[in-house]
Image (cartoon, rainbow, N blue to C red; front, side, top):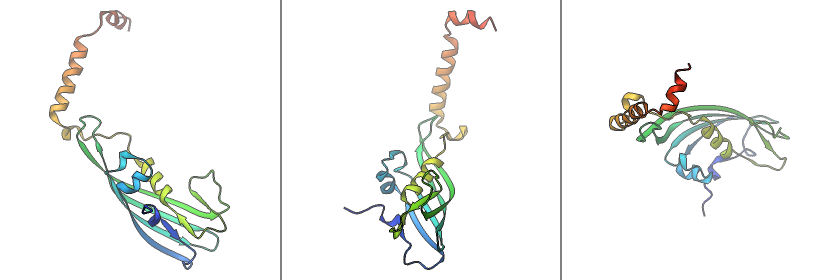
Length: 166
């Protein structure tokens, strides 16, 4: 079985000090490893800048791609473009309570960016997932509007007495 996360492990032992650039693609196979079905149709291109120093690695991500989901309002397909950036530090004896530090042991020869890349995308997902109103399916919007109007017309008389107290 192929290790899907292997490309996201950067061997730093053989790298010279200085800035190094890497490119990755996050797609359905990547997100399935993290059991996130919500992202399996999405794809992202990642530019990584790794600055190797004597005591640590400074890592910067630039993630760009498309989150494919369905509209919360009309349930039709929706593609949301996303751009995210993140800076991390990888070092030995790192503070495990800090989300921006990857702890490395003295015997590590590579830094695994897969979990951090996944978390950056997952946290960056928008809470509101809807087309602009004019782009939603008009048939679905009309049906929703008719249900809202009917609900207002069929008000409960017990609540009507309470509304008068305002």
